[in-house]
Length: 476
Image 1 (spheres, one colour):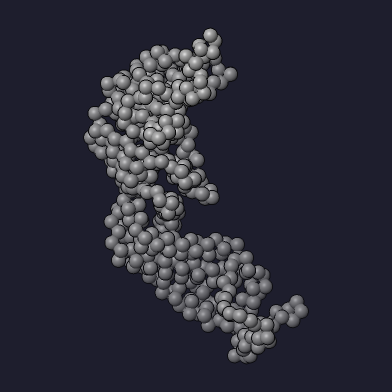
Image 2 (cartoon, rainbow, N blue to C red; image 1 turned 90 degrees about the horizontal axis):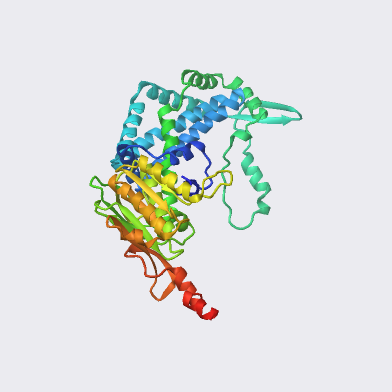
């Protein structure tokens, strides 16, 4: 999680969202391919704009209904009746509209079709039918409640609305002289914070004149204490996982980057085209790469120039596999990969002065632990292991480590500066390419090929006259 910068990745995906439940979903990779495919099929549906909009509208209305119910808990008693009724009316409309829209859109995923059937069962239930009928009656009763209010000092006088004067036209005429330019009428939408004890007092007065209307609303309130179904509330919460990721995808797609639904191979094959690093893409500077194998060779050794993108390449592929295990579209043009049950990383560790182990000893202990855990469905990403010893010793240690992983048929991306490792007969050699016209400048493209005859350090030393022969000449 640390080496692949997963928390940073999730932070970029979710933006300012700090909901712990949503974060937990992005930090819990799924353990089975069936669960992953289930999610990916839901994504396939939701990536259609019409389906996305229908679901987004639905959860917006469900949240609105839940907000009414939350406001009801803290409201004055006279307000509870109206808030409860508004929650019911919003919820009823949400379910019926969602069922109508999704039924006509032909969704294919098991997830959305299953929830559609669930909603249909609610709509057909006797409880829902009765709630709808009584909610309509209560709304008609509430619509008949119209009163006039007079404020006299600290007293409120309430009586039935009797037609009276049209105050809107009077106020309009009074301020007509201040009008200028284009006029747009704005409808005032009340919120929970605007409902004070004064409003409650007005309602208490109104209910004395509209007793039957009050009884209709009170009856609905008492007969239908439960409005929003638990399963519907859970769906509205959990589907944000999908919508938030799709919103993030759209933001990158607008910058020219693509996403794809990954496919899982059963023959060990890897074929990923145009994958890139999301963290760099967010900043507008990601370079895409490819990686492939027929499954016979499963160990990739990445060598090449300093600062040439080797670690970014390995990290980006690790992030892609992690996202695939979450069951979300991945940052690539196309992606065919095995279903990895585990991702294990071994990046450079800092020496701890409190420990007696050297960096090399830490590397050896980590590789032993990896070899104990690795199997044919494990992906290992190792970055600059054994770099604190001599090239010959580093080569021997790397050879033993990779040979054991090969016997276990594990997958590995091994980033190293030791060129001999890339010559092992059971590995696929990849090389960080410089620009052809400027050998000192990295292109950040990682392509199949043998290690270079000389590394960036040699080229830089040559540029500044610091090769061995240059130094010997100076000494002479």
